[in-house]
Image 1 (tube, rainbow, N blue to C red):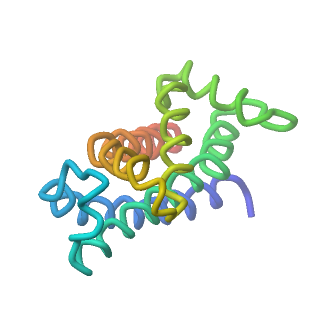
Image 2: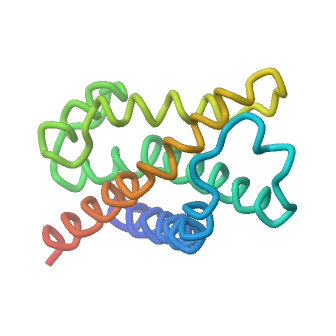
Amino acid sequence: MDNTKKFLLHIEEAGVHVKRLQDTLPILKKMYPLNKGDFAFLSPDEQDKLDVLSFRFAKLQDLLGTKIFREYLSAMHYPVEDKNFLELLKELDKEKIVDMDLWSEFRGVRNSISHDYPSEEDEKADAINYLVEHIEQLIEITEKIRKSFEAIAS
């Protein structure tokens, strides 16, 4: 399968994650901001919404970072072979698709929400609050790549 077909399949998958995040965000904003003590009082539905946020955020970020960025740059005729992720990220930053500092923050947040240790609930609450505030930026990155690719393809 060529890179264009792979890109289109992956950007379609990203759209599923984006849609679920957008559907969940209004509910999460009602719970915002969270603090450590709030976790004990969340309803099962609220806990499910936090799980959707965590899962879809992690899946979208991983899909962008491991597949879509490389496929997009390849379609832009940027030589991606033998390039590490940091080099790809620098190119995307230069193209105003992704801010490297923001991506680094998202990586840190992903690490914080991937654990369910009760002793780290402050960190988890901070990470969730960060996502509620900034998840739209990850969605915007996805949309920028999709729109740029469509412009190139047409």
